[in-house]
Length: 257
Image 1 (tube, one colour):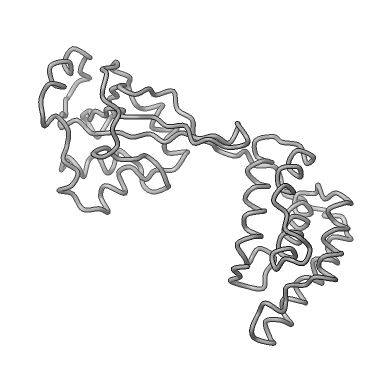
Image 2: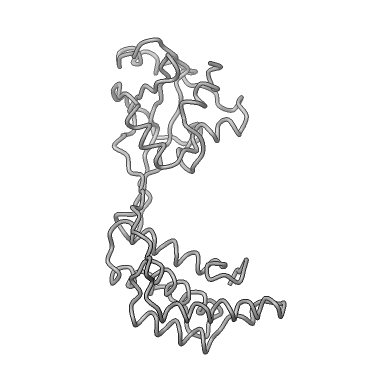
């Protein structure tokens, strides 16, 4: 167990349980379906992760007002008989961990009067296809992206499958939206894309590290120009993922606008 604090979610196992619960609950899965998925990787009771696993599962269900009697009883049993307090080196931390677990047991035997509400899990899946060319408004001009590849990240739960999008930036800026014909001849050129290597890593990271909401917003703003076949490649393209700034702002920086 990798513990950073004595809190219920203060270790890696507990955080995994919490994250899986929230993801599955957020896509509308029932508690029975969630339990089936999470319990598939439950540790043995004697395992050092057992206490963290069961306490986290019981706590997250209590927080959302969906705690089942089976999970509550199992959590109480493991906490009482297989406490992980001994994993903390300092006696003071061991005592605090015991206190934290006992406080949890008291909570589990009450009804949460203010349960948290279900929040939708945002999963990024795009309609973009390899070869698509998109115009993105940047101040009073338009910059152009070429989709070099789209990969679906598989998940046991189909609703949680997300897309990875690889793109390159054309070295073209225009006052008005160009047509697909404007790019047909451009693809034969060797240096039709911006050379991102000459920009700082922080600039490139900010350019493509946008969150799901930002990417969804970008899809609404981007104008589909057309599709021109491109060989699947990721070596010179940039992977759209993570959560940072708005893409338009960094495109402006990229083109010195």
